Length: 360
Image (cartoon, rainbow, N blue to C red; front, top):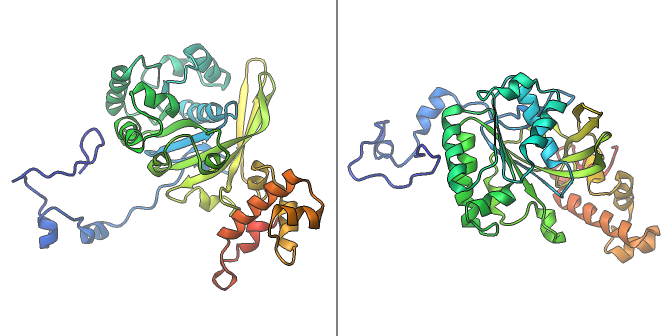
């Protein structure tokens, strides 16, 4: 069972009434009545509904915890604000929990520049902004959200959330407490939760995902998006960033993205900035975007794929292709990752060449 706070309750009180649902295993309250579920018809799997791409498909899931992570200045908060502005312009409720000290002036000015109507931002039934002072303040905001039911809840950032709750960023148990106490209740209140997080400095850890415990990735009920800078974001000019799929629990985003490597592209976020206006768009992903995000070209991957016998080391690649150490190292790493994930030919799906080549 799940209580009002979104916490799983594993203890059934002695003598408590249980649903009478046919069959001894159902009457004792221990198991799901699968027959009743099937009789009612299984629901369609969730589909992303927020942050629309130019092809009409979206990035983030409603009523789920979605994660946006990347390096400083990569555009993480801009992506979340663009998604929130999309909702606000549709008169959908947005909660912005600013733990990362962006500040109300900068945040609200950004929304105005993104063409969110001033009357929408003035209306507390549509937009609520908060910089929580402490744990009690934050938990009061979460309790209020259960009554208000925002469509979008931005939490910027997870790195500041855990210390605010006096929890450790490196403890799986502590993150689980933060998730069950803050992030999950917001999702259960009806929000597409956009939780912003950072990348660690360690090279091997960066490949896996955001800072701290791996429990963060397991807790994602929607999609986890890696944001990588393409063109630096500059005031008055804009910029762009690659969006790559680190995790997609329901597969709705992956189905509308090319199969390419460990973290396929979800699209490219583009920001155009004028004096008082900001416009944004998300282009549909194309083959080669995932390679570009890790600074590897599709042509270089194809060159490794053509080598016979296959390359065995960075030195081997440098000797046979005459490449620099950096080029050989980066390309060989990505090539091995994609090769390990490609389906054997006898079990093929028709997508194998997409993994390594820009064309069949």
